[in-house]
Length: 181
Image 1 (cartoon, helix red, strand yellow):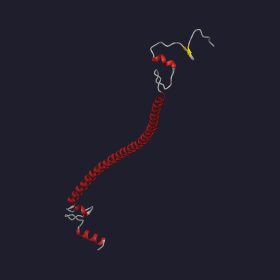
Image 2 (image 1 turned 120 degrees about the vertical axis):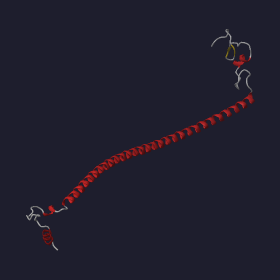
Image 3 (image 1 turned 30 degrees about the horizontal axis):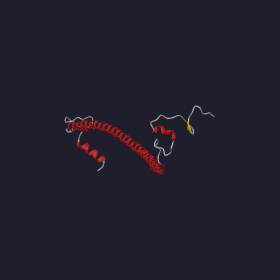
Image 4 (image 1 turned 180 degrees about the vertical axis):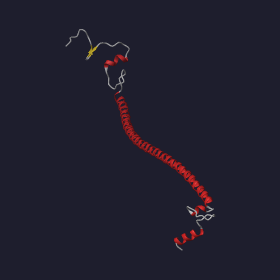
């Protein structure tokens, strides 16, 4: 069956004449009793489809806005995390540098302490040697009663005695009658 056969059959099934015998003008399907319910149904379906499409468009717009906001939030959080990571790395670098500096300071102080203790040990050893030498000298020659030196100075005799010192010159007593050279 072809399109032309279908067209002819429908034309025969629906005569163009009205019930009074006159030929109807216009489209033959408009005179069908099913035309009005079908048109109303199609109108309701189109209107419902339009409402659904508008509603879905609004929801799509809201979802798009939410996605844009979420993307902005994610970008903000990413930037914040990057700043935190950068700050943490800088803090670690600073900490490592300060640890190196502290190690150097500790090593320097340890070296100075070792040097000072060596010097102190040397001074202590020299002090012990001097004390031992003084003891040996005191045992060998004896000390003068007026002084704590191992040598005898007659000029210090007055400090041991209670008499006032007499004026002295080299080699003996000082006199005003002696000739000065």
